[in-house]
Amino acid sequence: MADQLTQVFAALADPTRRDMVARLSIADATVNELAEPYEVSVQAVSKHLKVLEDSGLVTRTREAQRRPVHLEDNVFDLMTKWIERYQRQAEERYQRLDAVLETMDADEDSPTSDHRDTSRKGA
Image (cartoon, rainbow, N blue to C red):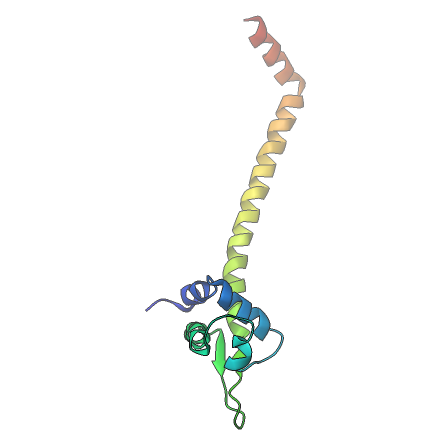
């Protein structure tokens, strides 16, 4: 079985499911309410919700006759931590690259490097 992070990213790969998540971030909704803007059956929306449920992004509860779908924000913490780790690594690489480029610029500006450049041109 795939880990939760893989399931979450796979669930969010579909634009309809991403739209549902965006709408659920505003307020809980029933399956019928979620189905309204789409030109698909309620059954198709239920299948999308099943994928979101399996990934842990949403849960369904019962309130009297109503069964609202609720967005689980703790899953976003998992995604955020994963993204931030790689963002930090990328930023560290860029900082190292900046340091190397600054060193190269300083070497080019030094008088001894100018002397070497002219001696090569004359050779």
